Image (cartoon, rainbow, N blue to C red; front, side, top):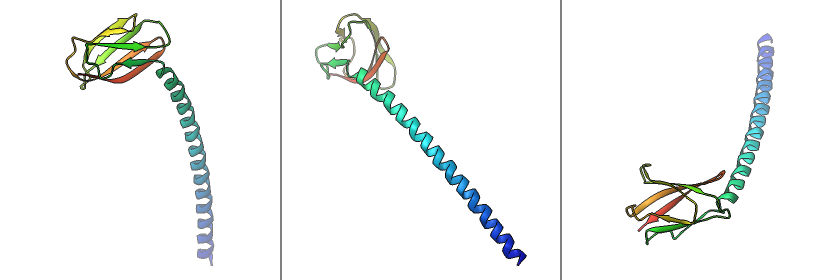
Length: 125
């Protein structure tokens, strides 16, 4: 009888522990989802800023690209090759960027304008 009572107490304690673990897991899931929602809101705000910056033509064929934005601020431009090496770094105050010194290929172009930073793929033919 004492053995049965001990087993019942053990099961009750296990259920209580499982219940606590379930509540803890539920709380963690809730907090994690709040964090994701906050980060998603930040991403949406950044994407709105990123859509303000445009690059054309892409692919580039004439040795020049044009960078458009709603602002007329200066832009810091960095172009990386596929292994991450900087192939061009400059600051422009107008829309035109001379890329005639860069070999044909695929690159990443990073544009910094004020607080906005955008990275895009650039193809040079």
